[in-house]
Length: 291
Image (cartoon, rainbow, N blue to C red; front, side):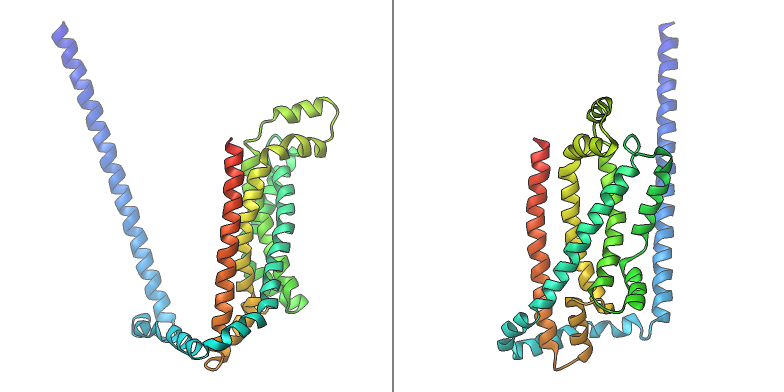
């Protein structure tokens, strides 16, 4: 009897092992097929884009360093003028940072309301949770540059279209991230405040926001970094700021490459500065929360 039981146990283990190996082989096969399909799509997409391009990618690959070399050589020849050029474009830099700051503030406020109204257990109108979530999805799905182009057509060029476009996208993105944080909030303070007769806004202000504020501020600072880059990019379509000046300098060509270099230095230095400052404060917030 013992031999029979041992034999049946060994057969069961062999069956489990063979079944496991079959699943591993099947998973490897599916993974290989997925990778193959991805490679085929990438190669075919590249070939289609290369055929529709004005010049072939491989034919022009050897010229990839010509433009940066021209810019750097002219900037080196006129290096004595770089400090004055940097001072000249400081107002445009201030405008770019202002666009990013105001749009981040407006977007964070909008994302705050979208997150609280679209989170299960916290929403004031639970039946409207899908509506607020879809609004957040739509706001972050449309790229800033598309909204900015429409607004420039309606309002004209300037910083206002860029600010509105970035704020809309920021509200949608932060609404999603804020909602994920709010879903992990402890509901006991909210229930306690509600039992004392507190309103929904008072429950959110006193019961939820103290729990999620460190993560909310951390995400807002991270978004501020992204919005600085976005505001500079939107300047290329006429939305003002440092990007607008950079587009003009680059479009003019030789003779103004020193101006383009000065703008690049300003933009790069600003992004690095705010990246370091916001990273420091975000780390402090998250570490303080962990304690």
